[in-house]
Length: 115
Image (cartoon, one colour):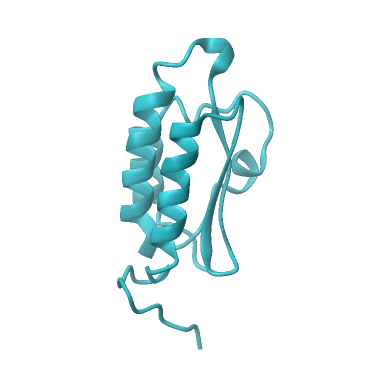
């Protein structure tokens, strides 16, 4: 699997510094983004929305990214911290959108199979 380019990785980390603040070891701190560039735009949309919420949470209620990966052809985003309904909704929407978006090229409504 090809991972996100460094340019896309840096851009995502830049738009959501609170959500990507790593205070402990996690799969994300070890592996980074375990997805391909085709999902970049949907990740960008999700992380901008998540950051808008995360930055306003009290320090003791902050949420941080634990893992971003593909599982069974669908995006999975896991986070540490208290469950937050609005963040859960954003993640669910991104996961549903990923099911209709090619992870490799970003083509919508036409997922391509790997050779």
